[in-house]
Length: 139
Image (tube, rainbow, N blue to C red; front, side, top):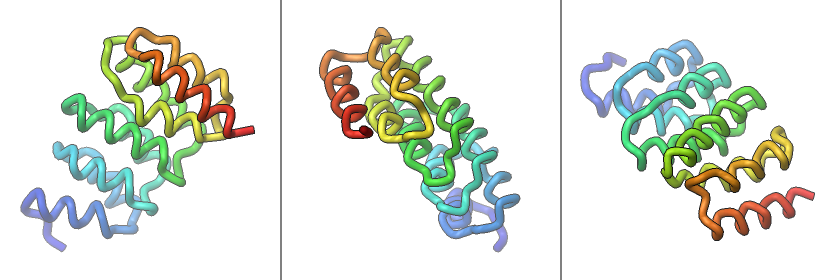
C-alpha cells in the first residue's frame, strides 16, 4: 500500500500487523493515527512506549493515554510510562481521568503506584473516590 494521505496512514494503523510498519507509523504527525495504533492489537510494547511520550492537544493526549493504558500488550514498562505521563498532566492541572481509571484496572502496577495519581493537583475529589473504588475491585 502506498501511503500518500492522512487517510492512508490511518487505514494502515488500523489494519497492519507488521510490527516494523506499526512502529514507523508512531512517528507520523497525526494524533488520530497514534490513537489507531493504540487500539490495534498487533502494536507491540516498544511502539506503545514511544506513543506514551507523544503530545498534541489535551483531549487527544488524554484519549491516547487512556487507550495505551487499556492495550493488551501494554507491559509494566509501558504502563509506568503512561502513569508518569498522566502524573505530569495532572500536576499541570489537566484532567486525564479516564487514563487514571484505566491504569487502576491494570494489575501490572501496584495499587500504591496508581493511588498516588489521586493526590496530585489536577485530581478532583470525585476522581479520588472513583480511583479508590476501582482499586478495591482489583482484590
